[in-house]
Amino acid sequence: MGMTITEKILAEHASEREVEPGQIINVRVDIALGNDITAPIAINEFKKAGALKVFDREKIVLISDHFVPNKDIKSANQSKLLRDFAKEQDLIYYYEVGEMGIEHVLLPEKGIVLPGDLVIGADSHTCTYGALGAFSTGVGSTDLAAAMISGEAWLRVPETIKFVYTGKLNRWVSGKDLILYTIGDIGVDGALYKAMEFTGDVIENLPMASRFTMANMAIEAGGKNGIIVPDKITEEYVANKAKREYKFYSSDKDASYCDVREYNVSGIEPQVAFPHLPENVKGVSEVGNIPIDQVVIGSCTNGRLEDMRTAARILKGRKAAPYTRLIIIPATQWVYRQSMKEGLFDIFLDANAAISTPTCGPCLGGHMGVLARGERAVATTNRNFVGRMGDPESEVYLTNPAIAAASAVLGRIGSPEELQNPGEIDEI
Amino acid sequence: MKFKGKVWKFGSDVDTDAIIPARYLNTSDPEELAKHCMEDVDSSFTDRVKYGDIIFAGKNFGCGSSREHAPIAIKAAGISCVVARSFARIFYRNSFNMALPIMECPNAVDVTEAGDEVEIDLDRGEIINHTRHKTFNCQSIPPFMQELVQSGGLMGYVRKKIISSH
Image 1 (cartoon, rainbow over the protein chains, first blue to last red):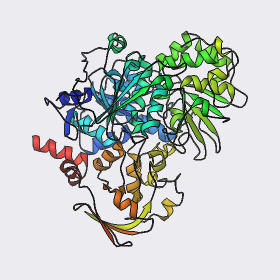
Image 2 (cartoon, each protein chain N blue to C red; image 1 turned 30 degrees about the horizontal axis):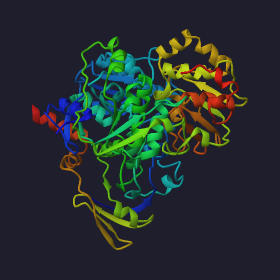
Image 3 (cartoon, rainbow over the protein chains, first blue to last red; image 1 turned 45 degrees about the horizontal axis):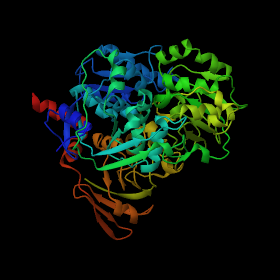
């Protein structure tokens, strides 16, 4: 019997010839990751266990990205724990404010995570790296502590659902819309405990930024990992970033899937996920008149350079509507500098946008754009749970960057097609 | 392990932001986290929850973030066990890793209501609802997970492994 790409990577890292769904295995970890919320508990557990040294100082990554630059004394103390531990253990992958970025955008950008890797991260969106053809999944702080000591993690081999996307993408439709549509189809637990393998000619032609966005939100369908078989586009992305060997895995033709779901994308328009679950999706044309108070463009889901460019194309020569706050957060220092060099910041500033240094910030209601009671935001982020961006009586609507930018200009949820002279917006 | 307590009932897709809102994640102190457990869903929960109480919930309990603060907050609030139709996977593994007892048992969830007196025998996979005079047998947990719980969680398991390998 053939194996899926997920099964092959797991088998390789468990030193087994083959593995099958349901089996519990112990795997070697190539990279273990923690952030300023999850790593403090892991560091504490590490010390409590009496451990002195991490198993490999080149395989642990610590990044303060959620509440930085630190928003209060408590969060400063948490970041300090990471800093002190990184110093003490002489970790090679520790990024300070000023060189950091949102972890899931930064790690691929720096070539820290590569195709064929097995990655665990104490952050649910660790599944993002599946876009590179790696097995990558979110775990808890105790898992991180154990991996820092032993270099290993326990995993249950997941069944795989295959998603096949065919047809031609409509204008303004990106990876964000494909994954929101998929979550709308299968529900927030539709892939519970399972691997989500994204395939089809649409995926084969999809740029890396959109692939990252899709794998990133696998967790929003309950998935253990999202994964895309690496190809020419992957190779182009990693070739000049990798500083060590990497390996391309693919799924066998006779691999077994617990379900196969096919989508003709020509019927999919830009998606809007309504409060308070990512599965509550509607096409943007069905939204109706929903006035908004704030727009956030950024996050590990949509804070990449391509997302900044998309927002800029729509915002060029336009302004955020009166009383509508537009907050733009490039996800890494590199995205920030590149956006500046390309003149995107002038466009954003002319549109009355506030541009922030990289941070997860408002996505989880941390800082840099927390909502008041009764307020409504459009965000390119990944979750719209009750109270996610602030007051429990506020609301978050999830969209792609094009819809978010257009909504900022309109002062309500809407599409670039509803702007004056939409024809003048360059094709993306 | 056996537990007896009063039931708190919640719906489906209770997310980790509901269990412990991110605005309180600038600390990992269990007592501090417990003060805000389930706050946005039921603001009276922390005042009224009693040591040993049991949570019953619908499908996909603990979906969303990987924050271990969620099971920590539940445990520190005094909850002895969580029973759900199903659990989100990171919450599921976090609970075993830190030895918070959880059980998947849809039949028991369907019948049990808030305030019921319930007794749970983790080893036998049995739930007795004394209020409704019903007994449910649940799926037993895989041997590896049982070993985790018996070791006091993942760190205990890792310590045991390291000791036995020397």
